[in-house]
Structure formats: C-alpha cells, structure tokens
Picture: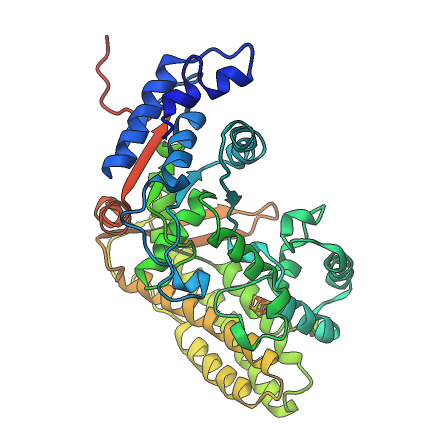
Length: 451
Ligand code: SF4
C-alpha cells in the first residue's frame, strides 16, 4: 500500500518522474499529518505558508484514502445512484475560495497526479445547479419568447439559443461571453423548478449528466459557497453534494465569512423588483403573466397585484431609509423587532393567492411549474422579510441594514441577518457529520506570540 512518502518523498514516484524534483520536508510533514487525520478520522488544522506545496500535501492523502483502502464506514447515496443500498466508494471534497485555485487543482495538479500514480482515480469540478441550462425551461422560453423578452433580451436569447444547439455540457461558462444574467435566470436549472422524471428532456438533461459524473467521482472540487449551500440544504433534509467522508478546506481563513453568508439572509429592493418584473413588467408589457393561455380578466388581476407589490416594496424600503436617516452615524444594526411596518406583506399574500389560482388552471404543465416556482420565490422573499422584521432566525443573530448608492444616485438598501456564532452550527452539521475535516491555509494561526 502506498504512503504519501512513497509519492512525495525523495526517490518517490514524483521524483522518479521529474528530474529536478526536490522533495520538501514541510510538504511531507503536512501530507503525513493529513493522511493520519484521514486514517484515524480526526479533524486537523494546518497552516502551510507559500512554497510548502500544500495542494499536493492534501491531494495525495485524499487520493490514497479514497482509492479503495478504506471501506469501513462507507455510506450509501441512493439519491444520486438511484440504486437503494448500493455502497459508494469513499469520497473526498476539496473546497476552495477562489476560482484560480480550482483551476490550478483541476488543470494542473490533479492531471499531473493522474499521470504519476499507478492507479486510476476520478476528480470532477462540481458546479451549482444554476450553472446548467435547463432544457425544459429553455424550450418553454423558446415558445413564449414574444411575451417574455423585449428586443434587447430577445437578441441575447437568440445567442443563447444558437449556443444551446452545440454545447456539450450546457454549462454557463462554456458560452463566451457569459450570457446576460436575466436571460440565464430564465433558462437555467433551478431548485423547485424541475419536473424530475416527468420532464420530457430528462434523458438529455445537462444537470443530471453532471450529477452522474459526480456520483462516480472520488475527489470533488467545489467552492466554499457551494459547500455551505449544501450544508444549508442538508439542515432542511436535502443535499446538493453526494455523501462524502473527507473534507479539505483550502483557503480556510475565508470559511467563517462564507458560512455566515449562507446561514443568514439578505433581501434587496432590486431583488424584489426583479422577481416582480419576471411576472409582469408594465413598461415592456412582458412577463409570465402575459401568457396568452391565461384568461384576460385573470391575467389583469395578477398584473394589478404585481403593481401593488411594487408599491408595497417601494414603501417598505422608503420606511427603512427614513429609519436610517433618523439615526445619523448608525452602523445600521437593528436591535428591536418591527422597526417599521411591512406594507409589502398584504400585497404579496394577495399576489400569491392569485398566482396559485392561475397556475392551477394553466393547461400546459411546464407553464404551471414555472409559475409555481415564481410564486415560491415570492413566498421565500416574503418569509425572509418577515423573519428579518421579527428577528426570528433560529440562532442568536445580528440584524442590520446596509445602504449604498447606485451610479445614478439611487439609494440601494439591503436587509441582512446572520448568526452571531457559526461555531455550533458548523460543529453540528459539518464537523460531527464528516469523518475527517482538514482546514488548510497560508494564514490560519490565531493568537500567535510575537517574538
Ligand atoms: S430534468 Fe429538470 S433540470 Fe433537467 S431539463 Fe428537465 S426540468 Fe430541467
């Protein structure tokens, strides 16, 4: 059985491959420590400065560990494999903060190790669902483009449409330049907006294909945002990533902020307006509520309800702005509940009821799915605004307002909340549920004594 020393050490597999290879003692020490942590199912924090070669020092143990030596503690992943009780091999997740590090791992380090090691292993980049084109949503938009897009968006949709005919993986990053975000949001895969096995495009679905590749991989490379999104979904009983036993955080000094971002909430006026405009844009006369299958009178009442929500949103953020103006020098922290009334709540309830009524009567299932998903989004926003105003996140949290100005001088306010101490959440949902977590960074140590 190979050890990290056999691969990274003097006279090891890499040294035999590269004439000018010089093994590094710090790298070997780190690789040994990571390997021991994996073997003994312990967690490890390791600070490795520039030049140590830390990516090899965690990749090599992760590859060795998932290459088949450890079978005890295997877990099942029936959701991904579709086969109940089938054992999946041990799997390691490498989570990074930056895309540049992901590129280095996937384009350089991992291919090199695949060439050097005497056995095969699989490693894939995992992207979030919204990075893939949803063929069902795309075809629905194709049929409805006249009622959904104005001229500018129509041209962009045309470009996306051409790309969709030739793309291999349906991944947003393969369209160059990347698509306009509004067009992409209208056509990408979304949680809660998937027809699952009933989807006519399921056999060609880009996201399903990506998930199958992920289910068969030993090493998954993700970013912190996806890792913590997965953790947040797991808290609700679901998952984005398949079961894994080993987790390596590189650039680990950034995880506290990344975790806090995903465990709290944030709502902006433009986010509300964007979602309302998707339903009905009075200026362009486009949106889901312009669907000609909706009886005219019902569509009209839906459009009016959207206008009322716009007004409610405007008022809510005006009240928040006034609250801030009355407290010059305030850092925006909110310590009391219901600091302003919520003029958006009632119009959103009304809109939600109308959307449900319309969706239930739409003849085409794909249109129903799309409208229900839009309604769910509005419900999420309504829930978040209410949670923020009543300060009712489950954890002890901090609530605040942020104010900035756009280039045109328009004030932009966001409402935000985040748990004060993410430690207990990480312990419960990450450290206690993962066999071994390695935190690696060039700058991890705290409380260092000065010399
Ligand atoms: S299976 Fe879901 S994600 Fe895939 S194309 Fe169909 S609706 Fe879209």
